[in-house]
Image 1 (cartoon, rainbow, N blue to C red):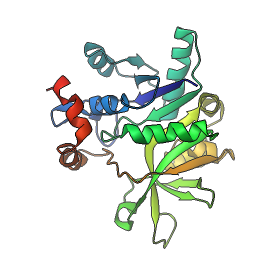
Image 2: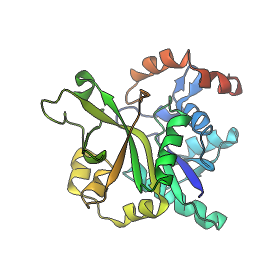
Image 3: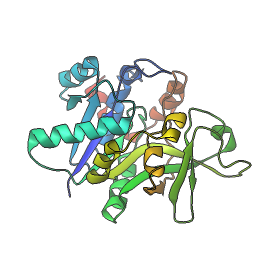
Image 4: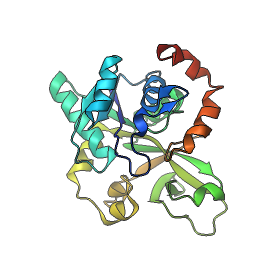
Length: 250
């Protein structure tokens, strides 16, 4: 088993342009994501970007980075291209690929490892989820999920789902795939709800391909807008992992 970790990052976020290189306690967000993910059990970790400015920033700091197409609309497509490029370049294969979103600078290596463990137990696609309150569920920035009794995800939405519920769950930015299933993703046509919701994983669900929901107890704050940085900085200020790498940049 060989696991590739891919951190997609692009400058052209519609809600927050340039956020991968936005400083959080003096360190660009993409560096937080990379350093924390590098403490996980991924055998190789790479930043995947269509932007030379991000690639050049990484190269100056000896962080692995690869330039991918600027035509991808989905992070999963970017991760799949990265997988193919690295396999072709290195002449070897990765059994599993972990997509680690580049806008969750509080990502925990233990949470990445829990996704890897679930894949080793036989799951083909694993997406971490966490319980949230109703106030959080009303935000369109938050992707909500519905789970069945087997903890399989049966729908994703930016709307409040289920209607009138007391308990809600949100998607987190760690998604694990067998590399075979990630390659299958790009062979499938874009689906209607994927486009309407702007959510990658709907493509699998609309093709009746199951996704395992893995419940996390660790609340991770994503950076969707500039205002989110203050909340992240408050948590990072007392974060033990941050203290392990901050001297590399400050």
